[in-house]
Length: 103
Image (cartoon, rainbow, N blue to C red; front, side, top):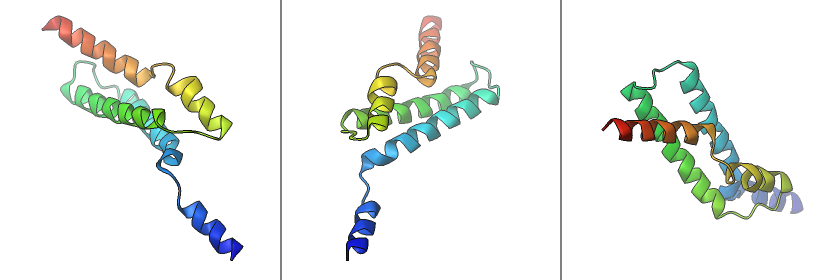
């Protein structure tokens, strides 16, 4: 009976437990996008970058509402990801600012 309960509890993971994996997936997609060498003025690049940026912002919003009892996870989110802008965010904001100046 204990084994069944333990398996049942492990299967019922909270949404907060999957955020780091989703965050790392977004960062990997961004690195791949950068490695493909899209020109920064390319419309497809901008569209893909914006989509990744919006996904990232959604993940960060969810993480702000989570309580991470594991110190490693807590430090990942509150000591790093929620404290400083990512390379993806800095790239998107830089391109957005540049586009706003041109118009």
